[in-house]
Image 1: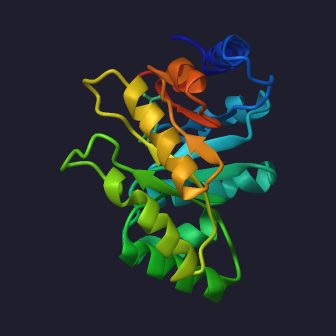
Image 2 (image 1 turned 135 degrees about the vertical axis):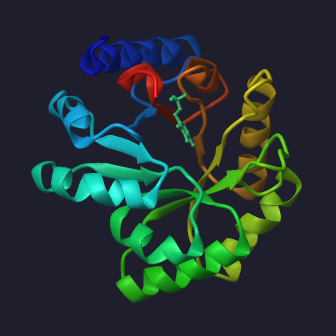
Length: 220
Ligand SMILES: *Cc1c(COP(=O)(O)O)cnc(C)c1O
């Protein structure tokens, strides 16, 4: 069995190399370690090794795993990277520090209400469906700039960045480039893009965070 801690250090080294090759500052890319499907016992060694930023794609799974881990590691930063259902908004706002999957009006409305109610303000990213895939979450690229604007002006939400998941069977580069272009047009600074198979490529296209699961924790 490959060891998650060794793989964590290998991924960190690869990120450092990709930063250097892209002429970017060392440490400019945040590693979001995606721990979905792995239980608390599998995550703990990675926490002990110093990793503090984690991604989960399901609210309920994260609730079953993270409150206890967080009592031991209070400085963790938890990202929701999967689709958010409006009936899970309350739980998501209570648990996550960053919600990367804001992708429709109904969720923007629900988040705005819930954040005010709880007086808790997770940082927010808008997910863009760069490949316009019908089965995939995310706002269509053509509507993304207007949606970011409505999040700000209608819902009073601060949008920190954009997130995308390129189509599995395509060269990801053009999708990363499109996300970077939309971010410029929308005036958002952060780009969450790149997963186990393509995070080094994403860093070349300006990713400020990469979401890496299987390359650290192993196959799911
Ligand atoms: C699962 C997941 C990842 C991590 O995928 P790997 O290929 O295992 O690195 C990244 N982003 C999202 C949105 C995911 O659901």
